[in-house]
Amino acid sequence: MADFLLCDTCVIIDFMNNRSPMLNGLVDSNVILFVNSIIEMELLQGARDKNELRRIEKKLESFRLLNMQQTIFDLATQFIREYRLSHGLALPDAVIGATAIYYQMPLYTYNRKDFMFLPAIELTA
Image 1 (cartoon, one colour):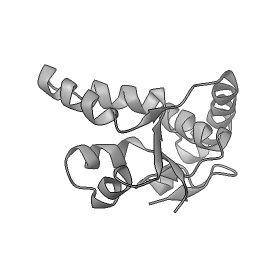
Image 2 (cartoon, rainbow, N blue to C red; image 1 turned 90 degrees about the vertical axis):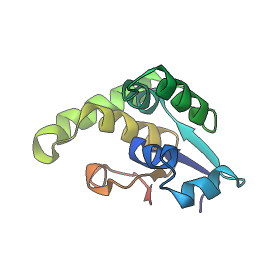
Image 3 (cartoon, rainbow, N blue to C red; image 1 turned 135 degrees about the vertical axis):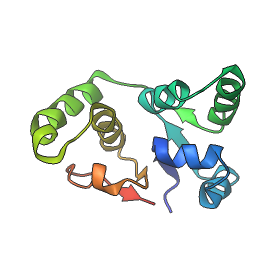
């Protein structure tokens, strides 16, 4: 396993619901876990009330937030142009994939089909 991972939204949702024993183990290990702003926003928008919002914010403390560089958005825009129509690439996934590629970081996701066509992406689950 890599020394660092970008964790996709789906993986963190399972972690928050105690359905991801592997990620629970990684949080307690030497592996450094990251999210980007898109993942953080996807999680926060899913809160149904203030208590859940606080719970999400508390769980997010286990992850480091990556800086979003303009190069990431440029790459994501290129991916949208190339893969939106042919593969149904969604905007959040384009930015998440571009972040993983920019930082040369494996993306920990259960949704391999959403990313596997992106060049130079390393996926793990």
